[in-house]
Image 1 (cartoon, each protein chain N blue to C red):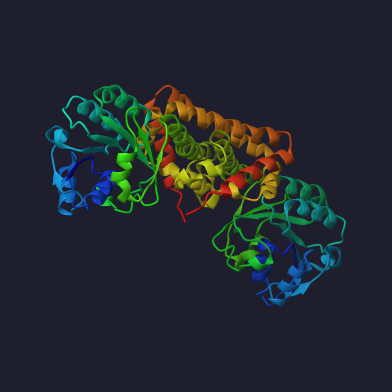
Image 2 (image 1 turned 180 degrees about the vertical axis):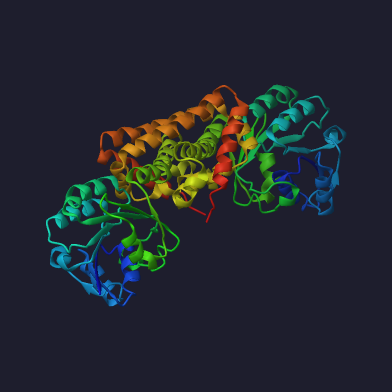
Length: 283
Length: 283
């Protein structure tokens, strides 16, 4: 029997729990401050046991999955570092930014020889909470793994195999640079484009009737959750600022070419962008 | 019998022709350098007559619709200014940028007391050519009209009523500023974001497997036609550069807030963008 604790039964954690609890050799204990969520998860078989806090159960666990918001993950790592854990316990998390979490794990868990493998799946929908649990949430999704200096990804890949994700081990720096460019900066761009439009044209109801699909596509993610994205941008600030700098360089290249009426330069830049974009498959 | 000439039987022109030729009191003559396109339009009833060039027919026309690419529209205006036209002829065009076209019309047609009403519909699909003709292409679409100083929009609105578009008279400056912000700059943003990503992360096939819907949405229009967008950006350069400046100001505000770890400023900017974006209805 493998004893697994999942702390945080939101969409991400509950979906992992729902898959792992399908294995009769797993005992999956759920912990969440929302007792209704825990009871729902127990009733529907998403988890097989419940506990009211991590201290009660930590010492018996073989695997501990931290699936709370990023700032709580850090608190949980501190808490776990003070508890007596099984010698071969595996701890992992689901936070979307990894630099702080990995630094904390190296500082507090590595000296105690505790295995920590940071995780981040490119999954998640606009839904949230335990009711969004979906055993197919991770199917064919990229799932980044960042083992600590004394750990390897393999034990977690074995355990998580039924999720159906594409696991990819990566360094924290690579991961954070990648996220900055393909996720954080696109969000800033969408926010900034909407704010530039309202500053220049007036409230959105003044120009909204004229916008076509292009503006709507480009700004769709501007409707994302403000608290979540404030946290995301601040927790990955160095990589975000570097990627922003690169973006502004590219924008200025367009300005320079337009100002110089440089048709061939514009054609070349747009042709490059088109060729790259066309390699990305749309949904 | 109202005699109407449509020069350029691409998607935009052929769709107008298809609607206008449904009226038995209209004689719709099509002109296009692509003789196959003209023959197809005649065979399918999109047009009721054909002509090989504008000189042959211009003097008999009540309405002349210029539906070619923007640079050809300018040449046609020059050509028309040298021909003898009906005293009450109405000339209109379908070009997406209007400053140069309107300036040329004011210079060459207004002194001859010829009515010119610039037009630009927010219509068009990824398809092109006469085979894309669709009598519903303009349904519920915003159709901007810019009458010259001696003209009014009404006669054209009466004629074009069966298109089912939402007509909106606007000054050239308003139109070009609007297009810069809601169409031109979003394209530059999409091109630049793709180019920044490839410069920072390597070729798109190196990171393409990791990108999620947000990056795809934000960069979808980066796959647009290079020649068309080079023309669009250059023909609206002043307004584009002003809107780009506004965008970069907004991007820099994010950089400043991130660098200062200013959580409340970030929350406020993202909340503003979210509220504005949510007023735009998605398809």
